[in-house]
Image (cartoon, rainbow, N blue to C red; front, side, top):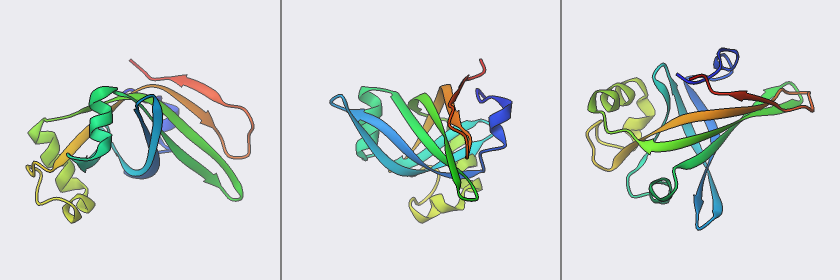
Length: 140
């Protein structure tokens, strides 16, 4: 996976993030549950959602994960590209290991569910209580 080792410990299996795509050169943000899996970063979403159309038109995207330490706040912002992952074994694995997906779709082969895979290119990190932003390139 293309995430710097120093950042891996900051992600849990499920992360509430704000995910941004672009529509007509205008950013569009929404809350999403980011799945952090040994195989990468993923979202599960409705195949008819606006974000799917946005990603197909422009795969450039970003997400931001808020970091909290007591009263101090920071973040990890990830610049990435997004695309549909149609690998059925991966779909089955993610569906089985992430029970919340069963609340939205009938099964891993439900055509209304789309798995979006994110390929990070850079991370911008501001640790809680700090004022500087550190840029980290994704590992190749």
